[in-house]
Image (cartoon, rainbow, N blue to C red):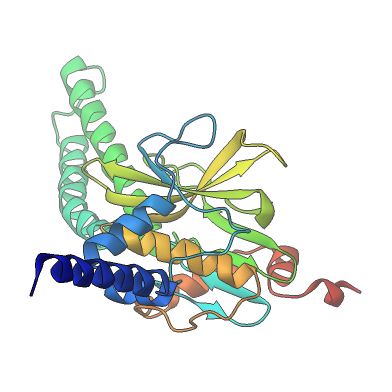
Amino acid sequence: MSKRKRNSARNKNTQNSAVSESQLTRKDILRYATPEQLKASVDHYFSRQPLLTPRLKNWEEDLPANSEKQVVPGQLIQVTEINDIWMEVPRYENIMWGLAWFGIIALVIPFIIVIGMSIEIIFSQDFNLSNGYHVGIISILWGAEFFLLSMIILFLRMALFVPRSQPVRFNRKRQKIYIFEHHRKAWNPWAKWPTTVRVFDWADIHGEISHETDRFEQGFRLYGAICEPGTRKVTERVILNYSIYYIQLQRELWSHWCQYMQHQPVVMDPLCPPPGDGRPQKKAKSLWPEALDRESRTAPESDF
């Protein structure tokens, strides 16, 4: 073949290649894309600079607006209830609740020993309240008893009365979310531990992800930033889902919530069922104020 013919054939192949590439659909591009290209495309979809002020501590990325079309397939991690009106997702703290029972067992024995020592000293023949040494020893033992009793009560309250899940409810008819919160005073067993339900307009919620690296919680945490209507000025932030290892799961979870609130078809089955026998979930449900419990599970027309 002559040089002129070879150049002509090469130009023809190049033109045919260009034409075939121009005729590729988006589905074809995704079909032949490598995993690295797909990941880069998804990462490019998420914000690389904080959009809201003030900036979230340990900010990782901003999620697409909840009114936008979501390109990431939605997927629930866990769900308690989902229907055409409302959806409830559990929200579990990264706490090893079994340690509360271990703490109770570990403290009961020294508590009994200290009480026995106090009784023995008080009822001994040489005990004298005018003796400063005896008074000092009794004061120390009573202080130890009070401390041990306080810790036992703390662990008992955590084991028996703190809801494991503090759920979030999404009402697609009212376009509101209801966030259940149990306010535990971490080291004060004698204080009240109230529960509240906070209500927000879904339109005012902006999704953010942080990267947590402390020793109690590691991974990616999903936040809901509440902004002043029509602005990017954050008034407060709430944790919508505690840390998990893979950021993609938080993206899929946010995408599912957005699609659900946009009245789009969504996957109803979660990745995994809620842990436990359901007792903590029932406990949390019983703490909802009656009016908000009904509102969060009904459509607006039921108010009349």
